Image (tube, one colour):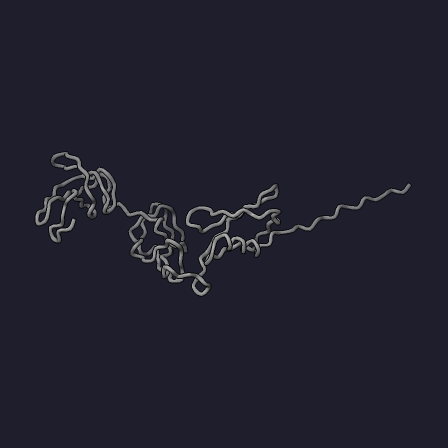
Length: 224
């Protein structure tokens, strides 16, 4: 009898995802004037179905790319705005960009940001003086454009602060000592307590340490 040899299994070549094609798909998803950056060092198995693309986090700066299945994978792809000269629409004339990290809840200083004329993002702030002194609602990283919805006004009055409570009409002003019982920014409403009488009332923050009762008018210009 002759032994019948069983041929050894032939290793199947590994097929990798075409990163150029994947990047183009992400670019179509992200929209015009946006440039995805797929790391060319990645070795991703070819996805049997079209990968799922969704925005990750806030600000539309990262896309989550997910390939389903038992051998699936997922990656996070950063999205950049195309600089001037590559078809970017400079509708905002530039944007304020973070140059050093600002932690969540931190107050932006002039040294934390810079204006970049070659950067544009929807909703981006276009003047440094519009962000300095504002508080950020999440951490900001160098190179990130600042959007208006990332900022809130800093509190000009904090709970426990001594304040002057002003009242009066045109040509007349009365000021008494008080204590703030809440935090509030300029223009915000705050509950204060009259130190002398103990009366509590609602006032509007005029500036750090100064609040005014509704109807108060500046004696210098008659404005409320």
